Length: 455
Image (cartoon, rainbow, N blue to C red; front, top):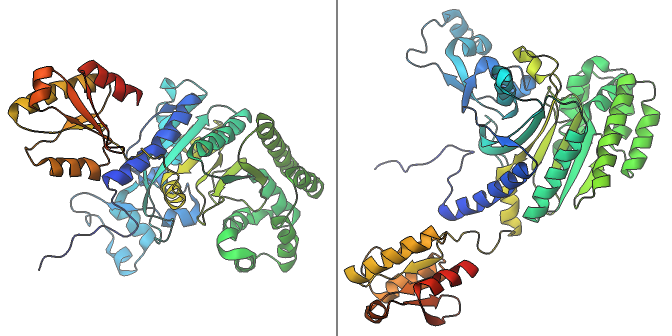
């Protein structure tokens, strides 16, 4: 018996109706990107591992999908590394390429590779799939789409304010209630200095980035395992559990970090961004969250994360400033800031809340019934005229009973059925049936176009 076909865990197929919903999300996000002046690029699904490795921290490197070299991939492999199962060295010998983990690092590579052709500041958006060798679970997939917008070549904090405004507009258009959490990496560095553990900033950020998933007690346990003292952990805890308004949190941070130059710089940057965003007005909740770390090593300033308020799911958008990312590709001093919408999680949120427009799955507006060759030919000519006017229409391809053709239109949620029979052929008219109300009316071709356009 043949094995039933399947797909890898953490990946999904999408039916036509599901793709209609996904395209609604992509089109909404894309329209906002364009409204703010962002230009689209694409990069390959695979990158050289030398481009990807070392950009996401030790944990991120483990989640990279590596691609075996073409041909005899065992050629040149040191057998000693095989015997000792030295995975680090074996990976370098067996794999030169990997699937992209995100869109930010490939974008940094793109900027450096084409720097002579780009006008700075450069605003780009990119909507493509990424891959992570993670354990699949609810809201977490091995293959998923990201929708990124980044600005490089500008230090201005107006870029952060604009990106927050874009986030607010996207979720307002999708009708999803969200909370935008904001922090600054410099504040975390200042906190590490304040608790006497400046050299453990990476360990601290990786641990506290998990606070929503594993809770404060488990975060503290992880910090202990990394060598933080009990005194340092005790001094850190109240900061991670800070309450109050954004203004109150900024005041508290200013007091606590007054002796840290980098910490105070982070507080002032955070103040500028939060107050600038508030001044523009927004629909979402905006809150400072000192526990927000986004444990990717390349963030250097503002960090952003978005949570849906009405669905239990992980972050649905995130991002931040990464002043040093292009430096690893030989272009130091180029500042960047960006955000990434998690389209697959947003899709799950909209599905759970049923927030799609009623006509989101509609692909055809009118179906022409097929009574035979003469009638079909007349219908085909009319369909051509409708399509030229931007109205989606199709002819039922086979001569079949009216009930079957009407049933097809009903199952496909086609709102209108057009009938050209003997009398319509003689008169040069079309009978149009509204599938919702059942009302039928005879129309001239021009009247048909006008009605369907205005509907």
